[in-house]
Image (cartoon, rainbow, N blue to C red; front, side):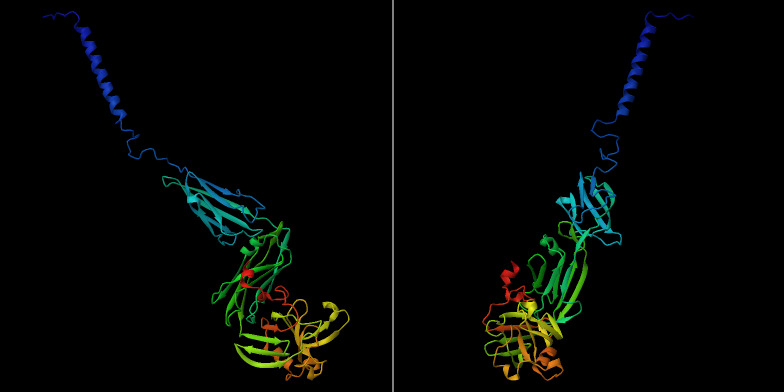
Length: 404
C-alpha cells in the first residue's frame, strides 16, 4: 500500500530539527560559561597573582666600587614591605640596622668601614604574602688621607681617681659629632660620662666627680671609615681598659708651704714644700699627674724663662701641666727652705738629694707613693687657676660647662 505524502510535512520536520539542535547548542554554551558570580576559573582563589608585586631596591648598585662609608647604603621596598635585610662584610660580621617607615626602608645604625666589601640580601613581601628577594655586593672607598686618636691612659694600667680619658687627634676634626659616634667610654660600676672638646684636636671624657676606686673604665674606638674632616677618614678599631686604683689626693697650701697627702680620705703624711716665688707663682687648682720621671732635665728656655735655669738632673719629677708645672725633688735649695720660703719658678718642690738615691727624702717617698692620675690641688697661691686644657686638668671646669 503506498503512503500519501502530505504537502509541507517534510519542510516542517526540517525546521523542528533545526530548532532542536539550536536549543541543545545554547545549553552547551551556557554550561561551558559557568556561573555568573564574578569568579574566573571556578577554583575559588580569585585573581591572586602567581608572582610577588613587591619591588626591592638596594643602593648602592650591585658591583659598585668606592662607596662612601656614611649615607650611601639604603634598602627600600615599593608595593610591599621589607621582612628581612642582612648586610655582612667578607668575614661574616653583620652590619646592624633597622627597618623603618612601616617596612618601606632600612638603613645601617652606624658608618661602614673603609676599603671593605659588603653583601646585601633583602626580602620583601607584597599584600598576598608573596616574596621578592634581591642581592648586591659593593666595596667602600679606600681613603687617601687618614687620622688617628692618640689616647691616655694606656691599656691595662692602674691609675688615680683623677685620670680622664684623653684623645689627641693628629688631624684637626671638623666633623666632631660624627667622630663622637665612633667613640664610647663606659665604666663598671656604671656612672654618667661625658665628653668635652678642647679645640678641634682633643676630646676628653670624665664623670661629674672623681672616679671611685676599683672602677673599670673602657674606651672603645671604632673610627675606621668615619670622615673626621673632608676627605680624611679614621682608621682605628681599638679597645682600651684601665682600672682606677686607690684614691690619693694631695693638697698644696702655698701660704703655709705644706702639702697634705690623703689616701682614701685619710691623711697619711704632711710634707714641707716650696712653691712659686713672687712673680713666678704656682697655678691654683686641681692638677692631675700625667708623667713620672725618676730624673729629668729642666731648661727654663723651654717654658719662657730664657737662661734663668738649666738643671740637667732634676730627681723624682711628676708633670702637672703641659706648660711645665711639675712637683719634683729639689736638692739645690737648702733644707730649711722647705716649709718656710717659696723660691721656685712655678713648680712645687720637695726636699731631695742629688741623684735621688736617698729613699728617705720627702720627694722620694712621694714619688713612690704616687701613680699617674693622682690629684694634686694647689690653693692660696697668688696666681690664676690652671686652665682645664693645660694638662689633664678638666676637673677645673664645672660639670655644666663640661657637658655644654
